[in-house]
Length: 497
Image 1 (tube, rainbow, N blue to C red):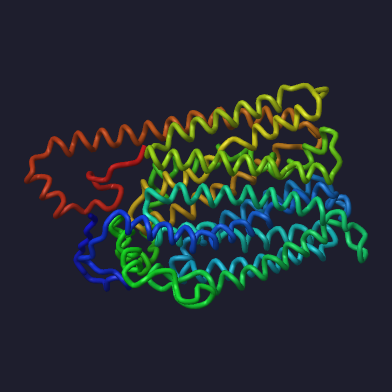
Image 2: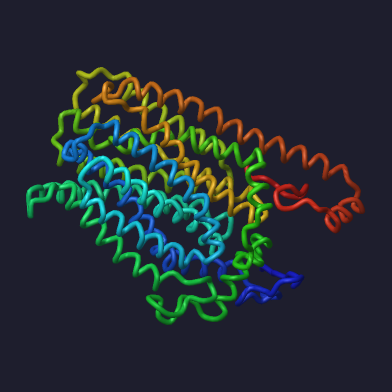
């Protein structure tokens, strides 16, 4: 039986919160299942749309977008760098905007905005236009994932987040697979109404995105207690279930007692930027995800270089992304069950390293089907990104600091593209052996970073436990009643390892 009780202090209690509410594990699980059925499909659809619109560029490049516009791969790489920088800045403010205006409103607005920018790709005529639309797409897309992280935190407990984030990023893999299949068909419209195939691709993607934004506006509720109306019609919960939905999250993390009311302060920004533990996660993100930009942007072209035609190459990316979704879901759900993060991340990077070693060292004369299987091995390795985000969030408190950290980690997950977009160079095409040697260096470093971050948290837990256990009961009571330490700086805060 779970019981929740908190004092009012100086703020009003959140809507639907009953301080003395009691509920059992089955009621808790029932609410979680309802959230998984009613909330997560919309969240997953939003990230599906996001990644569909982010993947379409690689499909368009395989259809000679740059050749049609009169520039080379250097412009593509430079635009990727611009995208990474702008996306990073937008991501930093995305979580803050979510807190200030409500993620249920920020998310649809951003989707609507980048839908129009996606549509705008239809009319680009030269490199200047290309740089402009890539700037605008980064500016509008960058904030949605941090805002979504803030949103999910209001509905789910800490031990439930990693699994839902695996669905979130796993669906991005499915979106990439869908985008490849859709592109293989739409690119064949080349010449219809005088348009290149890639222009048709951006047209269809843009229309789908704009229509989806309208649906999100009427489907995403403000909080667990206010789910009635719009596309949710009579709501998701009975009154009792709504109260449990609010209480279960606060019981898991008392800091969420004022989750909606908590706004980000300058002190939260400073606290996040000066916390070396957060920087450990940011470095893992930058270094560990480096391979994704060159490999992801050029995957259809890489497969095409093996000897498959352009339409088959785009279609063959689908199995890669589906396998990645399956492995990611399995890995993160196991990590949630055993409550361990570091070794799971390490094992995933070992898998990635072995795949890129094959791609780098197999000779050019290798059969095209064997080389394609190597891309399947790489793509099937579980992404460590959702695991790292969950690890960061559950080890960062208070809420304002955690919100800033969410924006920082999503920014870090994109800023690396500023240099990663230069790893695959035209002179190294089509197999990019030198680029893959560089990627192996980044992955080798990432292995050490995952082990180092785990060792750090283990050491901090031991040091704090030694200090805490050395105190008398009176000293412990005095600390709990009078300490000025906040969140993860408290002696009684235990880090997940």
